[in-house]
Image (tube, rainbow, N blue to C red):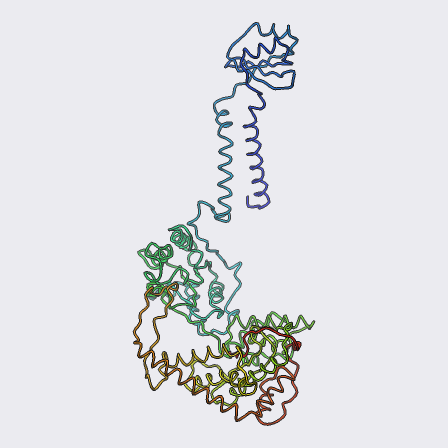
Length: 632
């Protein structure tokens, strides 16, 4: 019976029965009373210290159960028959009675002796099953698969719910055709890929795509996470793999989907742990099940990961994961399609245009766009709106790009002025240098960990960087510190993050991308693989100390050169710096159009409705990182 209420009642009934049986078993001696020698009993009878007695006759003799005048219970075990006892009892006015004891059989004796212990063992096993297996085998099912099966009745996801990855959908559509009609491929000698690995950044829809395949094909869909195979007991993971494939064979044709397969599929023989590592035993069993002596016809294994570089090569060979499908970040058309899918779930105002939002969200994944729609709906609910309007999407985008506003934070006037010049320095350099993205918004409202933020949004999707763009990015990063030095006559900790990014860009240009004439087209990066990500424990060093000094010198030259360029631009356009800082101090947030007005020498137009409430002035707001420049 699967009624959970009935199960709970049954468990408590068993517990109460065990307690009652134990009580009766251990309380038996108290019922019979204090043991006494027969001679002492006769002395008490003759002395008048016995009030009543019961003579119980059985196969083993006579047992006397008596009560003394002071209320004590006593018992005398016999095996004898004293005919003068009744006379002694009568003479001393002791009330007595006779009783014939019903003898217990061997089975009843064993039950009374061992019954409580057996009931305790049964209750212990039941609770172990509940704790270890969630009611699915418990203590005896460590090796059972934890895969959950979805069928066509509880999986309504189809390709219509997946957008922004048309190429990936085309790649996997033939899997659906095979599952619907296997004979179409088999009669020509074709073999469908046994395994498909979905690779892509987090949030791009790999899991959703796998679920849509099962929904389209109308076949059973087993889903499990890679971490579900990992257990503290050696061999459990391998047993779960065997059990999972056994279940899949019984339901073929079907799909097995392993999410985050890198949890068990990392390189063998590298990092920490040897061949006896539980994770490696699980991986070995998975390799055998996917392509060993036995073939799994009709069972397609799909897996998802965003770290294909750490997977074991044996997993990726033909016959196992035959095909790798790359689910990349969506382009502008894909973002528009994803937004349309998620906008169907919320009431949208007439001024909302998905193509405009898609153009302003480059680099967003499908999960980011779903979060954007949700945040916009929350903003609309806060203002008691009936529909979600464009201003809600703008506020949601600002929150995602720049962080949530810290409305309770107070800043004194000097710190606000320093932050205004810092952000104006970033915006000015970003506007003057040719290869940088347009300025989207500049704010000195504290958001996230930053006291101010300058946001740049590209006009189109970009998939690579050139040398001039990277050099311009370094100069733009220095704009904040230079503005503080020139106009405030001080240095603050707000430029720390800017320096980190500028140094990393310059070092990558020299050591990874061959963008240095002095050091040429050679990679100087060390072996930086993490041992816990399946890399080697040992670190190799193929660069001499003299070469490293040249690398440091070249990095220093690039940084100093871009610093001089940024300082020259800021000093030449000091009037625009003052105008931009003044606008920021007055309005606290300016957009790209207002920045353009200032650069053209025009008074900036008044701001439209901003996405947040300005913070209060006065007081010390602490010293978080300022000048964080957000880029999409």
